[in-house]
Image (tube, rainbow, N blue to C red; front, side, top):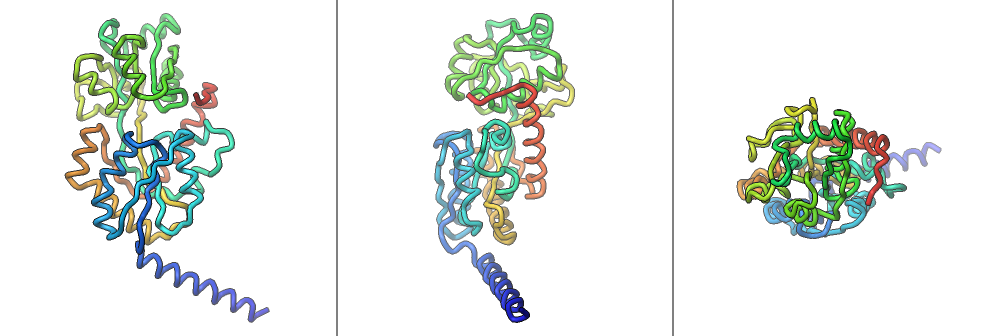
Length: 322
């Protein structure tokens, strides 16, 4: 029995040494970043912006693999089930915090099967009105929605999207009632908003701001806690009758659970350096992304709070995916 126990301890010791050596040498081959959406979106662009500086820093090729579907859950599941060896990573979007509440029998545990590495950045959502409407501010929209329930309709990129959930929370906090019009993506939403087919549109600042700057839509509110530096004249919802309101789009970096801490630390530093480089940070700022570059501990707590917050909203408002 003692010999068996000793052999077991020896095996564990050998494994620990091998793991430590692996972490020290990492990376010795190409590193893959999975993007759980098709090419072209902000999540994909963030990865491609950091691809070259990250490859230069790590000394190995960085491969971007797009694995779309299931509001980002299919790509996330692929990473959650990958070997925790530091060669497979995930850049997620805010749907990652909503999916556990929206997708029945999701194939992985969002909080336990992935290691949260970094909150990369955030972006407020912009609320716009068509110029033909009488609305000059979001407080005016609220006044009508409270007085005449369901007279106000608003469009988002889809049912179960963060904008949809955020506006459900706004209605709950203010006792107002609005009709949701879900679209299948940002393109159709913006087209109908510009055409005046939907009076109010809610989308990321990067999505909506070009139409505001072109004079085709009127900005009437921003969903962040503080005013957005790129659009300082647009008041927050907290300033317009929704006290303390704060909801923003976000992007994060994850690894399979069990990835060695030294590898996590190396990747965190390499990605942080790439994001903070002028060439990358300027591009992301132009897209409305506010860099956060947090610690793993901060991002872990952030994601836990997001999952809890939106689970309640989904349940209370009986929200189902499109």
